[in-house]
Length: 186
Image: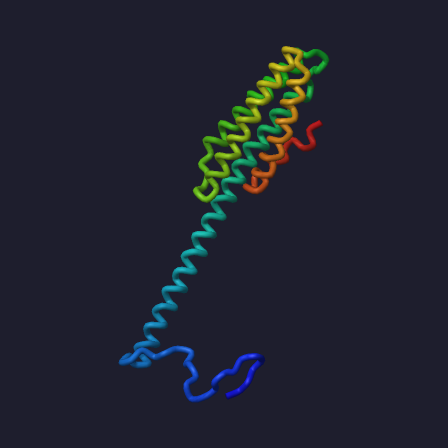
């Protein structure tokens, strides 16, 4: 008997073996069984790795397509705002309406884009945020028409919050142009 710390450990002839051999099974049969288990494990790991590669490729393909749609939206909006006169409220509302129509068309294109199963719920949430933003832009235009400054300020605050949420989500999905495409539009 040897004393280790506070307790005592019996070091006699009854030490446990790392594994207990099965009674009646030869060493070769046990080795074959372990090799089969290992082969199944390796096959499972390879299949899981292949699934992960395919899912990653599908997510990247979706992100490339979404970035293309958002890049087209940014180009169309920039082209529409380039020579637009913004002197009167009517001109500003017309620009807001055309921008919103262009954005709704882009959201429709994004909605038609098939999302991979692994990110489908996040894509649906992103599209829902975009639709909520577009509805808020409608409310903003109504507040401008009515001359309600308090409502306009409230809608702009909600738009800012929604914009930050959809930027974060789009960025996590890899759609960086959808997230940050309008950052440098001034």
